[in-house]
Image (cartoon, rainbow, N blue to C red; front, side, top):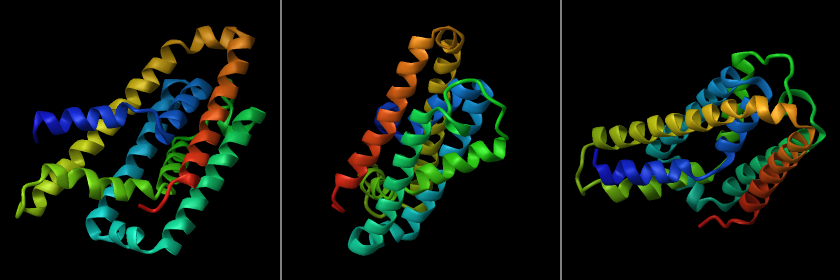
Length: 201
């Protein structure tokens, strides 16, 4: 596994996306423990997408506009629902301290949120082959995919620790919490709009 691949994967993982926003909001609402399980859920979704991509479903999504659009807009609807839930500051998506959510619930939400993003399997098909010489064994593909997955979890946990470190300060400021809630709601809505306006290719 080359340094170039690891560096590129790190930069891609570090870029804020659906999983990062969910991990941050979960950590602010439930602390580092919640952020950890949110990271686990998002990482599991990445593994599922990797398996799907290697099984060839990504190629089907790339060629079947109807299937791609169906999955895409299911993801859009879920993101917009999350934006509304955060803005209303209710339930499990509240960024304020609340009754602890079970690890299973946090993981389930992380998986559902990321599994509805059809761009992930297409990303694996477009990204990983750039670092695989022609005729390489399947084992190399698996190694690169697992390396990306591990990098994803590390980056999510970095964001979770970062959020947990400043959590107490934010919780003491009503103004900061209100702006944080609006920022997360806007982020989910923006990600939903971005996903909705992206083409299949």
